Image (cartoon, rainbow, N blue to C red; front, side, top):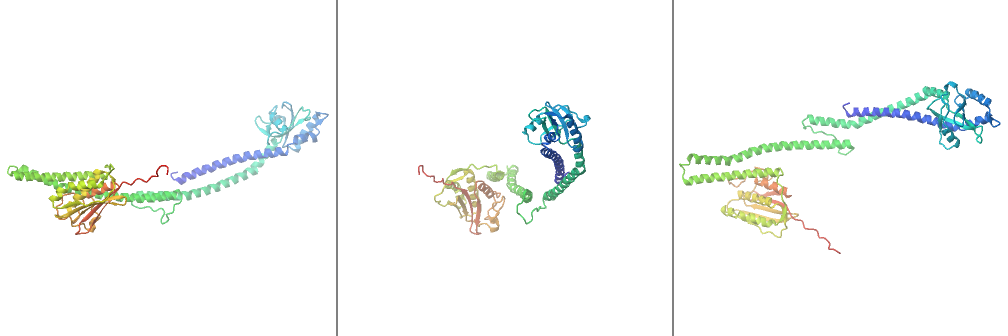
Length: 499
């Protein structure tokens, strides 16, 4: 009983057994009711006809001799009926049955009066004098007449001998026939139901086997439920198709987890390497100061301290970038969007880097923008994106180079492009430059001063604000990195009141 089919089969067997029993009870009750109604309708006037045909009334009184003769003859001629003479209170005065088998002294008059009034719906059942609780169909008339009643002639239509004969007939034919018929019908229905249940549960069994194999294969064996037929059927087919799609999704997610785990391992190795460099340099210069402090001149000590300070700042910057990237990946940073003029923010950022541009002999400028709408974004995060792109441009722009910032509307967004005049990015590196710790091959010959997280952070921030970021470059002609932000949509023109 561990399978669904076995449980459904047991329920079906019990259901058919209950139906068979209920059918037997209903058919037996309906047959008895039908026979009572038929017998009473056919013999409705039997009591009145007995009084008239057998001359039971003479000179306005019941002829007792004729009544006894009628009792004796009808016990022989028609043993299926029993005749009783009642007084006006329902007391039994005389009868045709055996004296030892009559158990009642009187019968209820309510069904007799209803029968005489012809107000009841047939069959009307009256008390059976042979039983304390049984009722039977009957025929009755008032004697000696309806005008001067002194009692009732009460005829039970299905007497004891009739019931005995009826029982024998039923046991010999009807019950066997109906029993075999019901058993054959229920057997056929049971077999048909089991076959149908088997057909219905076959797909569930197959789906269960597919799930077991998928689980036992450590989620590697892709289950195929529908094959080339992708048409939706009933709930079982939809369940199978959903499981198949879910299995594909599970395998994809497992693949992504493996990729992420590989990336995490590579990330840990890269972080360890990038952090070890400034940390080793910082530690080395500090140890030199401690060991050679008395033999170093004041200028050499300041130089060592300056180098150690720069390395500590570099280490601090890399740690801050790592924490920010982790916060963006974990969705812990939530943008606080507001409307602001993007051109003013760009101008402020460009102005902030002018001293560095003069120190590195690089021309940094913002191309004059046209009329720009406000953008909806986080000012602080957007400023960080601009700083990272300009920092990246500084890293790849040689002396006497140019860094240009261009802002213009583009559809439902505003695009900001940072263009440098460096050596550019190789085509095979373009799709990887936004990955953490990636260093393009053409870095302009400058010593590596960053961990390669600036562009990765810029991409995370841009996507978090509903924009996108992409790069374009031709080797030898510099590179352009562009990001977009959603602009404020104009309010719809509402009709004036009264128009």
